[in-house]
Image (cartoon, rainbow, N blue to C red; front, top):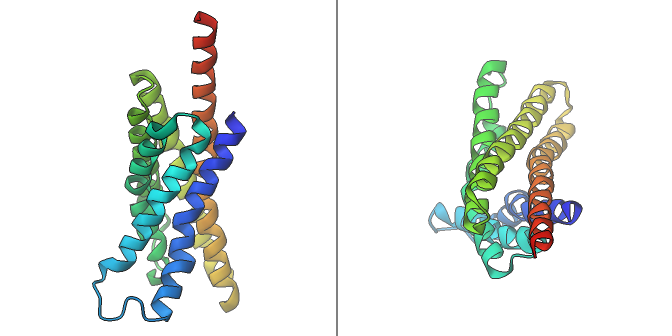
Length: 201
């Protein structure tokens, strides 16, 4: 079950990334946001995060409750990291390593921790599991933040054409790696809970 949930979470997390790097730019190019509120791109990303959360929870086998839980948790967990990724092009290149660590690691750790805590709490599988989920997803998010720090520190060595590719790859890994780790852990916990119930029954 762990593998299915991890793959499902990666697929769900890929949707907001597609929104940031493909859907929003394409819609902007064709003038979909012209004359409208600056919140329109955010609404697009929010919608894709909601759909992504519902998709990610499909492998949990928790029915509508599971889909609702992570459709709620994903927007809460990915909005800040997505804004961080969208702002990477505006970095001056003179930020210190400590500044990068404080912004990237802290934002990813907090956001993924929120995602794991809220999603698991709404599943209703118990307080101890929810607390462990918060810790696990926080740690996974911190790993993603470290990936983004490494990506930014490598940018000065990249060519002009390689800068965009480096940002895309680094940002993708920074989101998908924590999703994999968190999804695998959550799948394992739910699998253990189901086996325990089967044993008691």
